[in-house]
Length: 346
Image (cartoon, rainbow, N blue to C red; front, side):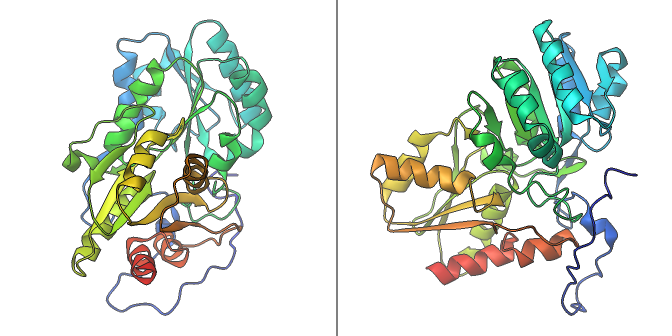
């Protein structure tokens, strides 16, 4: 059975069809986040790994039957002798990667985020993280980036992995972020969990004089009314919201946090402490255990109390299946839904 279609349909039936919008089809359930006419870049993870492989012969690619669906097939085509297809056996995949790392290789391991976080947690913890091995676990379909239901929707992966000692966690925003994160995590000595977008990935951050630095947050735009602290594609959504709210004369700052662990606490404390703005944490993850609670804990421990603190996140629930645009609006993480929330909080 195809690994992309194992989840049951949970009956998320969209409301009345807007005659001004094209009818959504099954293809709208796949992990494509690019809007109509949006700039994209193809397979940024695979292409960045191929480029890295030119000067790093110890880099190998390993996957559990999902090379095509994580863009690792691009690396496999360039370096077939450095690619390992382990089959539908994620636990074997992780321990095999640990063995490769013990021998001096740097494995880039791919699967779906739901499989890595739920199925292989103990194997990553005991076989990779506790040993401090140089394995990079890079996973597609994080959060709500597929409509195929809760068996594939890794809405709690960050919560699961945040408690694992010595594991770096990265949640890139767009194609540029991914391309720059790949060599950065390869240069980091130790295990990394990175969320992935695949295929035609939106390109956003090149317009903001941005460069990825492991462990660093970046202020993409400033604003006097609202501070949004965001990660992953919710940074793209936050930038869209900032533009939408300009019409209402609401000025929105966006602080992009691509590294969830270790968290750039200094940058967060600085931005929250600057003024009496509404502080919002926006993430493609459950409201439980992700960036929002990490930021809240940071503020609490530092004794910094923002006048107003809100979260834009997925509910603590098993989500419906359906077309991604419908689900994003239903669960409040589309640009339009987020803009409505922000205006309601002001």
